Image 1 (cartoon, rainbow, N blue to C red):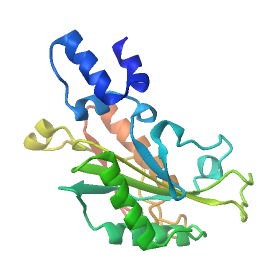
Image 2: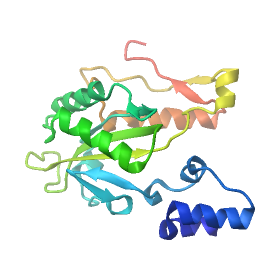
Image 3: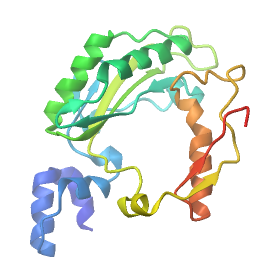
Length: 220
């Protein structure tokens, strides 16, 4: 189908083709929402360099993939400015510290990389995702010598909930799981592994017709 041509043509040529075939010009946001995330165009900042979106890859034996040794942030840019950027980056560093590793770029360096990437992507309003993870040098639970990798991706992501649903009010299920006790997991870190129960809970809620799930803390 026509969507399969996007990775080869890039957004501009693809949008032109769609316009010719369907008689309208789709917005960039609609195109990006309908394309797999690994097939978007643009660049990603990865370990100090800007790389093409399609070239930002890791090995299948990456420790962060198998053992969830990864921390991340979720930020929004409005009018070309990233909201509370430094506070987010400081929390990224703190999350890494809680997981036992040091992020090899300073808060100021990551802040600047986010600003440069936002401009390079050509976005004014966008979602910003910095992430740091242990690499593939060692497998097994212990991976003291693994490289700590850092990447930043920025894309246009619409509202988390459907605007029509928000006007009516969001219907929430009660999650089966609770947020973990700080004595059982590093729950003060924004760590990838903590989101497993979030995915399970949201999927279960959606299967029942709800928009999302309300999750209690470990005390209920």
